[in-house]
Length: 169
Image 1 (cartoon, rainbow, N blue to C red):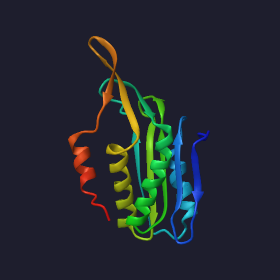
Image 2: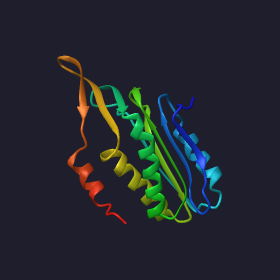
Image 3: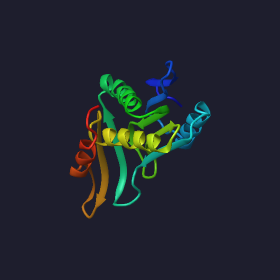
Image 4: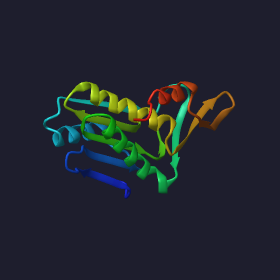
């Protein structure tokens, strides 16, 4: 089931096709990859990343909240910046919100390009921005010796370092 805040594949002349979605229900990342593949038959490579809720470490659940007026427009802007930086034929970026269980997909970013480096680079670029400079707040429900408690998740130093390597064009 699609969230009401969704941007379907759209192509501007000479630009990549986008599938940018913010979802409040489960999604099939393999379906997103297959749909991108079908819409970019001339692609020489498709790269993807699927982020999932950890099954280890006592995580019972993950909750993602966001600031709705900025989140989807920010994701669309990120896709457009990736398209400007890399020679893309298509880009899909799906991100969940709400409560998720261990093993559930959180995010799927996949890029299609004529050459693998552009596809891989675009996925890496988008994930670094989604991880450290996005419009989401995350918290985990963790079990420990004293019971279960929610803990906010902040970007790590490594996440900020990853983001810093992308210099403006």
